[in-house]
Image (cartoon, rainbow, N blue to C red; front, side, top):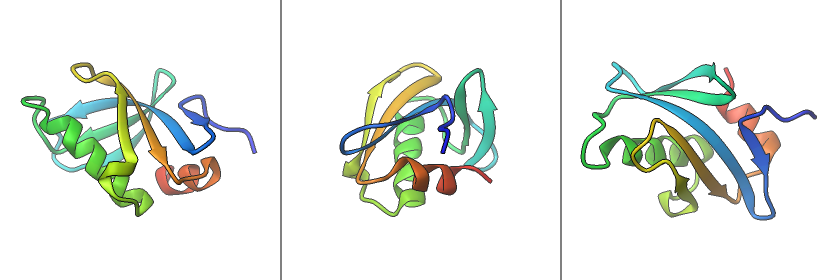
Length: 98
């Protein structure tokens, strides 16, 4: 299986490159944007609320605890890189792509 450019398999899970659109009406996957998975997030980009919403969304999608989702980079940027532990790349593709 060929992995999308935004997904990387690691020893303990996956790394996902995400482009976040905060302030959307609903939280959802919205396709791809410039080599990253695009997420629309129903949270404002202030005080870490959008980051918390991204982590909660991914944890729910993968049925893992929020502590298994780690923000690696992009704390104050729309482009983020996250690690999700305990998830395979194959299941990540199935859970995230429509």
